[in-house]
Image (cartoon, rainbow, N blue to C red; front, side):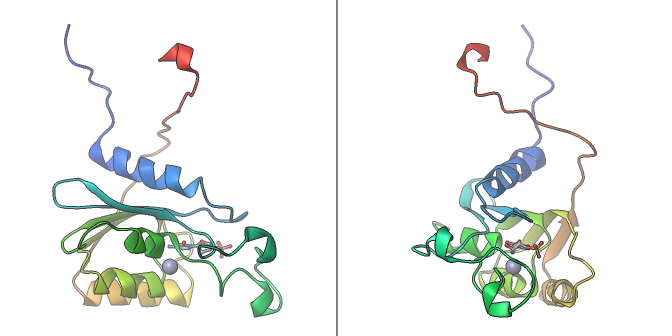
Length: 164
Ligand SMILES: Nc1ccn([C@H]2C[C@H](O)[C@@H](COP(=O)(O)O)O2)c(=O)n1
Ligand SMILES: [Zn+2]
């Protein structure tokens, strides 16, 4: 019997984990996931966007417009920051896979934690100033930035045990 040839690539594996992590997000508009790996391709941090620990989701707003204090924006912890805060070791030289290009606040945290590469899937917020600032922060710090695309590739997770 010869080996399987249609196994997933490392990029598909780690971005897949970032996408799966984003599925935990309760944000009704944008679900973001991040997965940090070290130079040995070991997963060292993972996260998604959500309210801070202990903040009941039922008491916090998920809106986007109107009174700033009644929107999600001042309260949500971004996926990249959660992945950094959840990390189990120093992140020097690590790579972060993130479903959406980091904002300026996450870019600062990425730089400060010495992550050296950002691989992202979507730049849907690219016209916002915070994302222009973020690109500047990352580029100025010499962080490698890569957009990956898998075309229309889909990975289906089947939880039916009889199909395993
Ligand atoms: N790189 C990013 C970008 C965004 N987020 C979070 C922050 C919010 O929960 C949501 C964006 O909401 P929208 O303005 O699209 O309604 O995504 C993140 O965690 N990391
Ligand atoms: Zn952010």
